[in-house]
Length: 80
Image (cartoon, helix red, strand yellow):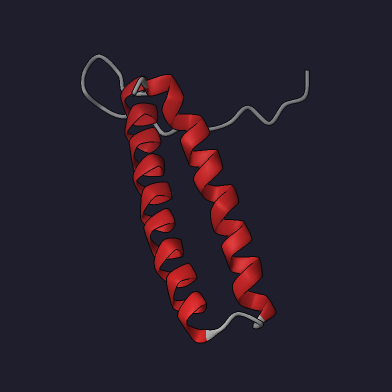
Protein backbone atom coordinates (compact mmCIF):
# COMPACT_ATOMS: atom_id res chain seq x y z
CA UNK A 1 0.00 0.00 0.00
CA UNK A 2 1.35 3.42 -0.88
CA UNK A 3 1.55 6.34 1.52
CA UNK A 4 -0.96 8.27 -0.59
CA UNK A 5 -3.53 5.51 -0.06
CA UNK A 6 -3.39 5.88 3.74
CA UNK A 7 -5.22 9.22 3.88
CA UNK A 8 -8.40 7.85 2.29
CA UNK A 9 -8.18 4.87 4.67
CA UNK A 10 -8.27 7.32 7.58
CA UNK A 11 -11.30 9.07 6.13
CA UNK A 12 -13.02 5.75 5.46
CA UNK A 13 -12.27 4.48 8.98
CA UNK A 14 -13.51 7.72 10.53
CA UNK A 15 -16.71 7.58 8.48
CA UNK A 16 -17.36 3.98 9.49
CA UNK A 17 -16.67 4.89 13.12
CA UNK A 18 -19.19 7.74 12.95
CA UNK A 19 -21.81 5.36 11.53
CA UNK A 20 -21.14 2.84 14.31
CA UNK A 21 -21.52 5.52 16.96
CA UNK A 22 -24.85 6.60 15.46
CA UNK A 23 -26.10 2.99 15.46
CA UNK A 24 -25.00 2.47 19.05
CA UNK A 25 -26.53 5.77 20.20
CA UNK A 26 -29.92 4.76 18.81
CA UNK A 27 -29.94 1.95 21.33
CA UNK A 28 -31.97 -0.44 19.19
CA UNK A 29 -29.26 -3.05 18.58
CA UNK A 30 -29.35 -6.38 20.38
CA UNK A 31 -26.60 -6.85 22.95
CA UNK A 32 -24.55 -9.19 20.75
CA UNK A 33 -24.59 -6.74 17.81
CA UNK A 34 -23.80 -3.85 20.14
CA UNK A 35 -20.73 -5.67 21.43
CA UNK A 36 -19.57 -6.45 17.90
CA UNK A 37 -20.10 -2.83 16.87
CA UNK A 38 -18.23 -1.61 19.95
CA UNK A 39 -15.33 -3.98 19.23
CA UNK A 40 -15.17 -2.74 15.63
CA UNK A 41 -15.29 0.84 16.90
CA UNK A 42 -12.31 0.24 19.17
CA UNK A 43 -10.33 -1.19 16.24
CA UNK A 44 -11.27 1.78 14.03
CA UNK A 45 -10.33 4.22 16.79
CA UNK A 46 -6.89 2.64 17.08
CA UNK A 47 -6.47 2.77 13.29
CA UNK A 48 -7.36 6.47 13.24
CA UNK A 49 -5.04 7.22 16.16
CA UNK A 50 -2.13 5.53 14.39
CA UNK A 51 -2.83 7.49 11.21
CA UNK A 52 -2.91 10.74 13.19
CA UNK A 53 0.36 9.89 14.96
CA UNK A 54 1.98 9.22 11.59
CA UNK A 55 0.69 12.53 10.23
CA UNK A 56 1.93 14.38 13.31
CA UNK A 57 5.38 12.81 12.93
CA UNK A 58 5.49 13.86 9.29
CA UNK A 59 4.52 17.43 10.18
CA UNK A 60 7.23 17.51 12.83
CA UNK A 61 9.79 16.32 10.28
CA UNK A 62 8.64 18.90 7.75
CA UNK A 63 8.78 21.73 10.29
CA UNK A 64 12.13 20.80 11.84
CA UNK A 65 15.09 23.05 11.19
CA UNK A 66 18.49 21.94 9.98
CA UNK A 67 19.88 22.19 13.52
CA UNK A 68 17.39 19.56 14.73
CA UNK A 69 15.11 21.96 16.60
CA UNK A 70 11.45 21.47 15.77
CA UNK A 71 9.63 24.66 14.91
CA UNK A 72 6.01 24.66 16.15
CA UNK A 73 3.45 24.82 13.40
CA UNK A 74 1.50 28.07 13.49
CA UNK A 75 -1.19 28.48 10.85
CA UNK A 76 -1.29 31.76 9.01
CA UNK A 77 -4.48 33.44 10.21
CA UNK A 78 -4.12 36.51 8.03
CA UNK A 79 -6.61 36.57 5.16
CA UNK A 80 -5.19 37.14 1.70
